[in-house]
Length: 521
Image (tube, rainbow, N blue to C red; front, side, top):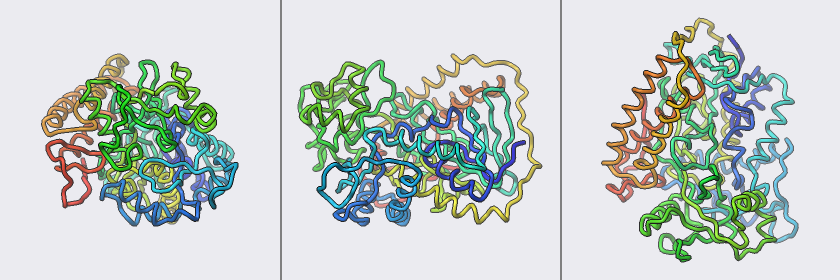
């Protein structure tokens, strides 16, 4: 048994931020299923939305978030995130984060602020087009220097340990190097496992985004909320070789124009903000254009900004496109919508507490009401920063009243056979194609019913495989994406309307009955 005050599962901005705070008051076990750097945070290009300019206001950022969230945001949560953002940003800067500064003076802010879809003002702090990578590096450097944080890489949580009083006591964790399952006990358990993008065929997410936190919480009996709202990013690079490479929304913020394969700009037909409309609208517009013309991709055109500007503002994207034979200064970029962000997740309050005692959830695997039905661009990193602080403030006050219960059942898996990785790969691909064909940008009741029937069969097949073969990373991930796919389908079937990132052609309008969708075991 490995015992600690805190068990943090995940190493993105939420998990690392929480660990850095929690180590002040207790011992932290930080587990991550690959290396520390392997998270969605490290892939984030755009930046963090935060009011830093006197021409901008908290009220404006709040209103933009509420509008993007399509009526489903929790206003108290939105206000907390927006109004405490400057303090959290200062903490990041004090740890060593360098956001891009201006080389000229045209406003009150010292920062070079980006503009993204849904924002009424420039307010996105960035570090070129590798903001998430730079933040992740800073946080990891600080975590490695911190006392009281024990890091366990290549360790994947299998299941949460919850006693009969509905209290979380820890987790069973698979150690890939030694091929063993260990018991981690803790007073406080924090899920910071990231998103669900790998449930879909086309995604901007890294390979680790298999919905592990949501699936484990669901199996443990926690409430899961609003999982029908899977936000598709409008512009993922379309290339048979490129894997999950995102063309940042900031490219459209700097003047990029979406065009069909005839070279015609089309967004003005769908929204007054044209190319800077909220992501759900842009993604559906692209989906409509593709189906209308029978094309596989559309173009993003930013050639008019010139090579000097593009190389300076988007060095990583420019270099990556060149690698694939696309010169952004001379060529239009082929793009396609891809699963990007899970607006739902484990239902939590403002302190990130779940419906299971001593279990917290932060970051993308949590649903706290900030994102609503459709996340406003660059509010995701902000979410992880702000609510890791709230989770810490609440949990540290709980520590003195919690004792570690060592009387927990051992993890039992009597299987001796080694499963065929190819079998799991086929299951994974089957799920991803199913979800992309039937539960993607546009849905209907018939497709959802068909998807549910098939996913239930796949779930039984994976369950049998899990019973017959030893634990492996591949098996655990497939088990989780099947579970998450089922939750998404059931959530989508419950919502008899179209709102935000959920569009059902059988119910194309918003309902006047605004409420969360809750799925529980």
